[in-house]
Amino acid sequence: MVMETKFKNPPHLGQNKMGIMPVGKLMFNMSLPMVISMLVQAMYNVVDSYFVAKISTDALTAVSLAYPIQMLMVSVAVGTSIGMNSYMSRKLGAGDVDAANKGASNGLFLLVASALVFAVLGIIIKPFFCLFSDEPALIDMGVDYLRICMMLGLAVFIQIGCERILQSMGKTTLSMITQLAGAIVNIILDPLLIFGIGPFPKLGIAGAAWATVIGQWVGMVAALLLVFGMKHEVTVSFKGFRPCKHTIGEIYRVGLPSIIMQSIGSVMNIGMNAIFSRVLMSKIGVAIMGVYFKVQSIIFMPLFGITGSSMSIFAYNYGAKNRLRFARAWKLTLIVALLVMCLGTLLFQLFPEQIVSLFDSENAITDVGMAAFRVISLHFPIAAFSITISVTFQAVGKGVYSMFMSIIRQVGVLLPAALALALIFGRVESVWWSFLIAECAAIAFGLPTLTKLWRRDISPMPDGAAV
Image (cartoon, rainbow, N blue to C red; front, side, top):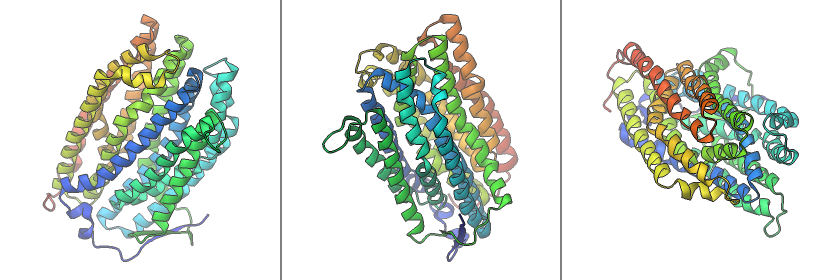
């Protein structure tokens, strides 16, 4: 595969809206499309589990066990794309057209290569499920679901990469279109393919996988049409491309820590599933974990939409050496993040029974799930600080600090705390407190690290233009 990226009629630095539009208006314009699209993305995750739960609790458990691997795929795609986005935004802010060109083409090349690796691993995925269960029926359901998602997962990599190219230019409305297209198709196809409604075959849990994959391919086609079929500052083609070692290194300088950081979420999920299934011998704990991570995405995905758009603004104005705009964007991002997460905490505290019961066709998980939702949601406001600090590190090319925060939050503290609580108290309910413990530990690292970075790299920058 060969690709080339170039600017057509490159704009002057000051003409880019990320350098001149009032920060509040800019954040609203860029984040609103991403929040809407990510809400729809979150909804299709919830809808997927809702219909799978109608099959059986075992089917819900199988999908919950598969979820960390799906998270891993998305983590590699998003992490690589974050590296590409950060690199392109910084180079655009600095006016380095040639470097930004190479960033887009080399980023897409890396995404295709990553997708091929997962497709091969999908063939041999069965031993993964055997780690958590000895029940052949549950294992077979998990394999049927995940193998389809992995072997046909190229679309999610290309879609995410194209979205990040659009976001790096501040065109989040176009990015929203690609996500909406795929999510809506998935939501529509889920019940049709799972239960065999009308002319559609009844595929059970495999139907949920096919609905996911078809939605991803629709989203990819939409993304490719928007990137290749419209005129942008960046134009991608397949002529004369050769992988650039330096550019790939720069992408992975931010992207690799981002991949590790987000992949740690998969490791955490796998570790928690192991604690529930092998230490506490509880399939209910695994099912609740799966439900929680799908439902909490309704809160976290909009937050990621806000902070994702903010990262482009941070990176652009860091590259442009505009301290006032950078600081203004950071403060607004933190305020909005806190409001979103406090609202999430309120919802999880007041309506846990109504939420969990949607996924409990056999009346098996509601009581335990209510307690889980109330305890876990206590860490949401703290997470607003953690995530804002994390994307700041990514935007200024210090992605390794974000990686350290994620290691602390999801592996270094959370899993040992969860295991200790499980062994000491021997109850599923006790494990949920590990989320709050881990979030506090992450802030203890992230806040002083950001303070030092701000004094050294951000405060000395020129004031820049009006904010």
